[in-house]
Image (cartoon, rainbow, N blue to C red):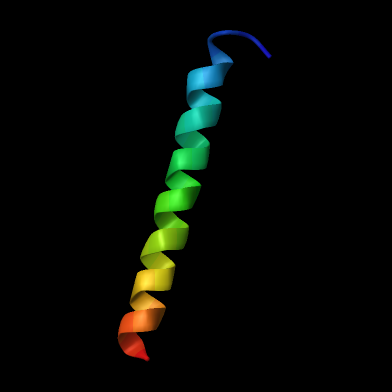
Length: 31
């Protein structure tokens, strides 16, 4: 993995975690 690709990989994981937290928050709020 190139050094330039690492930040993109971390940002991608960060976005996935934010989406998962958002979905979980919406589901728990609707319940």
